[in-house]
Picture 1 (cartoon, helix red, strand yellow):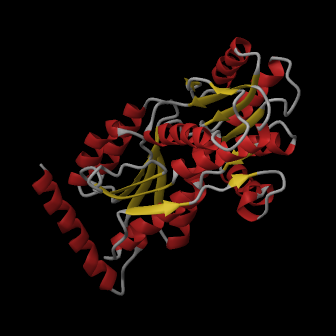
Picture 2 (cartoon, rainbow, N blue to C red; picture 1 turned 60 degrees about the vertical axis):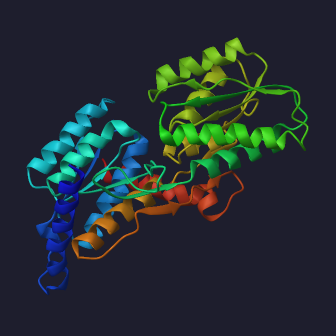
Picture 3 (tube, rainbow, N blue to C red; picture 1 turned 180 degrees about the vertical axis):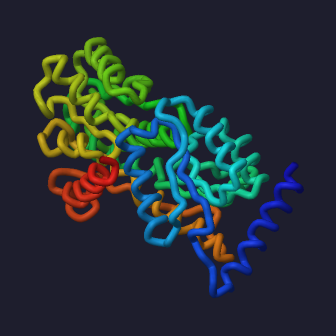
Length: 337
């Protein structure tokens, strides 16, 4: 299968090369899509905006969002298969674990160029899974470290517990939470963190109401809680709302969560949240479409690309400030009316 797929991919790229040299190369002849579950999730809308705006800027008039409105990834993978069967050319696949690998290999065999942003799928030998042409993401190890450093600086000398929550067990969030723990242990060697305990990582899920209930239960089970690091896109809201339900004042629990959505930025500006890790959702999707365009034109792209996730605070500037991310959030609201 690997040899056959390699031949197919080689032929696909060679077929694109003459078009790149032709004066009549027309992006409108190519069909591209972004495929993901939970299509209406506010975080996923930012990703979709980046992909669709890049496609428009590059002249791809046949660009669409496919997948499912629910959280069943198998339904999204089925949509990717259907896209390939219809003659699709390029695909941004939103996939966080190895359950996607069979689908990637299958659609690649059908001639679809597949790129995955956000989630690292680099294998131990430095290669990518069969059929995956390129991969990019910000480093969860780095933002886990930055979150731990900010949390430690905020809570140094205090006593209590710090919670860590994830949406699911996936390569990105696992790496982020593990980095937070490792950094905290190292910081404890030189900072006054002896009276602070890191709790076991819990899964809060991606649905706001149920996640808030789970986080409230964590607070009730650990009334001494003074900090929380949430790695899901709703965690600033779910943790802040859980704290309010538990009778905590705004800021009483130092909350660091993921993603610069409109609601999360509101909570940061209101003082309910200490900081937001702004994964480069828009940028990574925009660059994925740019990479597809380069390949269609016969060019080459790197297998792996590093991106940066700024930590946004009230006093931050540029990409570390609220205004920059407010602009992207406003575009999402307008684009998907």
